[in-house]
Image 1 (cartoon, rainbow, N blue to C red):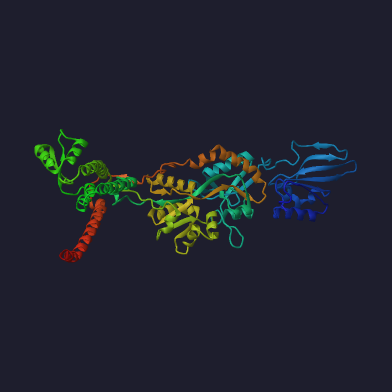
Image 2 (image 1 turned 30 degrees about the vertical axis):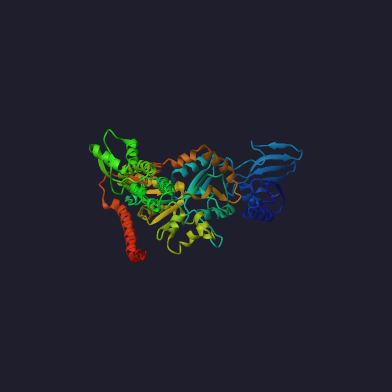
Length: 584
């Protein structure tokens, strides 16, 4: 019915007070009348008999045409009821229409006035709120309040409600939901938390941003988006740890791959150039490039004196024959020093010496760069940040997740049927999925998340504020944020279905968000950006220990074990080789 009456003018003509009362009650209960639907009620009943129409006339875009019959003249009075006025207050007469078709306007008001843009009577509205990070809730004595005390709410959201109150001319009082949650729909169709208070009309609107969902959109009306964002993972930073495999870090994976490719290319080039040689000559230097890269091999000589430096000397020694090399070593013994490298046999070809000389130069640059960076990285300790995605948390055997209780996200997890979020929902049976309220977040952060066995999954603005508050207390960044966000959302202020107050709130909310004032209020928290870029690595000037180097020894042990296995296999295969030699 509400869709059918959208943007229509509905005229109700009746002198039956029971019918008029039933029409007013049912149209409000069934949310048939939107603000865009204009309603005219024409009757000859006196105002004192129209108490059943008070809700319709005051809270909808409705006007009353009352026919007056006098002894001298007849006219039609035009009446408007103000929003949130008491039922005992009669509607205000704003115009009259006489039998002579004369229109007389008694107040400076348009026909079907926008009563909810600015309230004329400054009503007191009830606003539902909840404790958010960097907000405070306190009770103060107030004799004028119903219970003798009044809830004082401070923070960015209080500033936004105060702005709306001044713009729309109303006063407000804050209330809390019984279970201190935003609210979600239950299997029986009822609502919990602040959303339940809105649906049951216990409050006029929710003063905190509600993340929108299909169920919430069907249960209430909402303003323009007061904020957008995404859900993110907040994890605790563990102690500084030493990476035992840090000796691999001086070179990037691309450099390691390039070095391996170059080694294979040199080996292939030597083999290709040796295709015309005998098989004995073919394999005599097959592993020389490998020994050069690993700095293993027989003793040779490298020129260190000022008379022989750089590539020319290396190429000169490489190209010379074995006897010539030995003669050069004898004549320049003062400028030569021994180095574990490759011996140049006299029978090697000049192109073999040239290729290996160039490979020696490449290896020299690579190993010196590696050694210099390695010494500076062995003392580096890294700060583990293991949970960057939901998949990281799901794959961990024991870490638990904390989500907000009775929220839109819990509602989503309860109803999802497949995919990764179904896996998240199934973690509740294993005790690895917990739901906490907003008021519990600070304690959960300080105990469970800080210990490292829990992570908090919540919207970005909330976890950022929690981190800022913790830094203000501790003076250090003990938490980190995941690089990936998920479940994007938009949030709005929510009121009852077809409640015209949304028409007045929405343009003010849009002005707050478009001007950036609300963002400034939300982020106006001490140390809000202090922990934006938590370092993943920290350098220390400490002595090397086995903790730093055990990865190197593990690699060495693995290589020696592999060599030992190959040697044992050769020993086992030796009798077969000897028998084949005797046969030959």
